[in-house]
Image 1: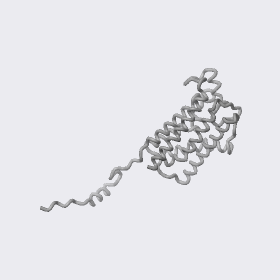
Image 2: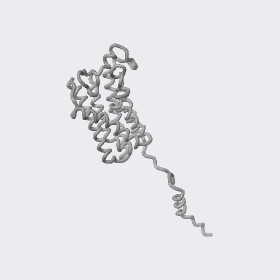
Image 3: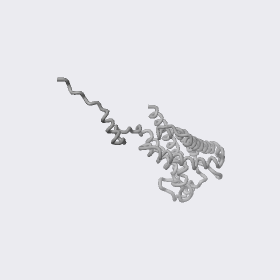
Image 4: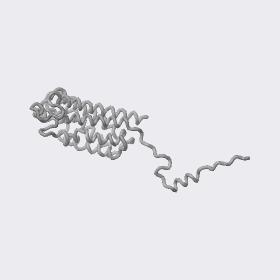
Length: 236
């Protein structure tokens, strides 16, 4: 029961994070870039890194509340990361894994604060820890998610794989790269993948139990059979 509640909470956090990132994408691209449209003058201009919602760098210009939404998304994702080892594997992480997960969560939260602060102030806010924080976020988050994907099973493994694909650090070096600077609507793709991961976490059932005798040796099966009580015939 407790594990079910934990997975529901984790799935809800992931869904919330993904929805916020998709909303940030809408703020950035809606009205200037139709889905699949990359050639119009307005869309080409909006692809410039000057309008990035994550890890902004000068010169930079916010679009609506896109940076605030993206920052909030990373903060919610940081909370979900802390619960993921239990939600995906059903057991407590070891010391090394716990430190790695905590580092990924701190990196995500720090980058979220950076995006949120930049949006609220209208100018670039450097992350606490500078480039070290950025590289921890970029490198450690995918490593943690891949490790969890290896440990998880069934729908929980599917959730971990979707998180690997949807993680902003992975997106920034793959489908977020467009023909000019940023690919239109990449944040929405990332957000929808994270929402799907949350649905998989919530929908995943408890770890299946092996049926009696499954995976056991013939000798052990014979031993169990030998211990079975032979019924006594009725007295006539």
